[in-house]
Amino acid sequence: MLSCKEVASRASALIDGELSTWQALQMRLHLAMCKGCERFIGQIRTTRDLTQSLPAGDAHDEADDGHISAILSQLHKGKQEGG
Amino acid sequence: MSTARAHEAALVQLLASGDRTAFEQIYKRHNTSLVRVATGVVRSRATAEEVAQETWIAVLKSISGFEGRSSLASWIFSILINKARSRAKREGRIVLFDGAGEDDNLAAAFDGRGRWKDMPELWETLTPERILAGRSVMEHVNAAIEALPPGQRSVIILRAQQGLDADEVCAILGISEGNMRVLLHRARLGVRATLDGLM
Image (cartoon, rainbow over all chains, first blue to last red):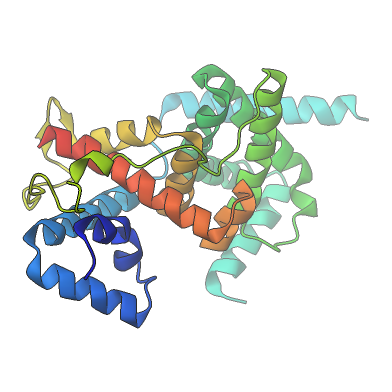
C-alpha cells in the first residue's frame, strides 16, 4: 500500500497519464480510501489546468509596437553595415 | 505535412521576406514567455528584455536557414537559452536547469509514516476569475511561476504555456525526460503552495 507521501510524489505522473497500469492501479486503490490524497490530486489537477490556461502573451501593449520597430530597425541597420 | 507544420512553413517564409505583420504575430505569441524564461537565468528584468530583443534579431537574421527540424518556437527558445546563458556566464554564473539540490515543498506536510498531518483543502471554489488578496487567481499563478527556480520556471512555461513537446523542452534545456517531469511536478507544487496559502 502506497503512503500519502508516495501518492503525492506521483500526482503529476498520474494526471499526466504517465504511470504504468499497475502503478495507476495502486494509486487508485489508495485514492479510493484516502480523502486527503483525493483532494490533493484535485489540487494538482486544478494547478495544472490554471497554468495551462495562462495566456502565452500579454494583451496588446503599446510598448510592443515600439519594441518591434526597434528590433526591425536594428536588423535593418545591421544589414546595411554588413554590406 | 500537417496543417500546423504547413502553417508554420508559410509563416517562416513570410518572416524571411521581412513581413512585419508576421513578425508582430510571432512576437506577441512568444515575447512575454521569452522574457519570463530569461529572467530566471539572468536575474534582472532589464537584462532579460535585452536578451529577448537580441534573440529576435538573431531569429530574423537566420530565419532563412531554419529547416523545420524542430518547431519554430523550440528553435526560438533554444536561441534565447544560449544567449541568456552566455550573459549569465559573463556575470560570473553558470546556470543549470536540472534542479539539483532543490527539494519539493511538501516534506513537512507528512508525519513519520508518510500520512498527511493536515487534510488538504477542497478547492472546488477556486476559479481563474476569483479575487484573492486583491488579485485574480491567474495573477497569483503568474507571480508564483515567476518566483520558481530557473529549471522549474522554464519547464512550466515551455510545457504549459507554450505547449512545446516534452522532447523539445528537454533538448532546449539540456535535461533528461525524467528530470523534466520532476521539475514540472515541483513547479506545480510551488504554484499549488502559493494558491493553498491564499485559500
